[in-house]
Image 1: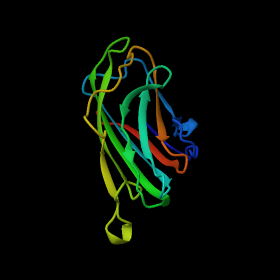
Image 2: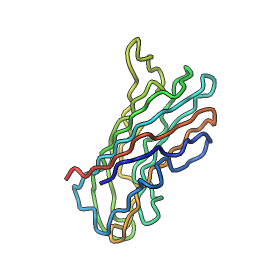
Image 3: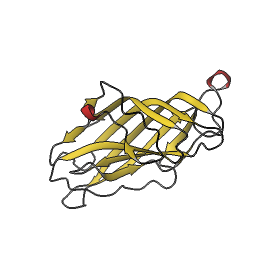
Image 4: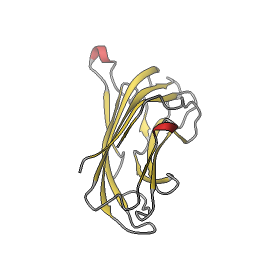
Length: 178
């Protein structure tokens, strides 16, 4: 459905912000979702975290007319207590439509994984590779509902709890699996 042609904005503040390149955001048409439809979201880029205050990282996949309704939340991903500077990361999420309708009736169920040596306790690649966390952290559940009868903007927001880190999206792709 869409793939990125440029980097997203470099994010360094400890505040929630869109991490996608503006030109690569997509608006899905009204009535796009049907029960059982699966979207596959793939993102990758670079991330940094500090040794003394690594904090956590969090991705929110959003839909809805304004692209701000959180339909999937990775939860707080604990970052490595060993300093990491511009190391790669990879996020994959499958979002399955569970219900459709007006108002807040349309819901998606998501599950995926986040991989990086910036993940807590991940070894450096030379001695064993990267760490992977299944997402969401915690109990999987459907996200907030949105209205499937209007066009829906897709956006992804990133939050790092400590302003000592940074994140840049280098690649982004959304595919419909059915």
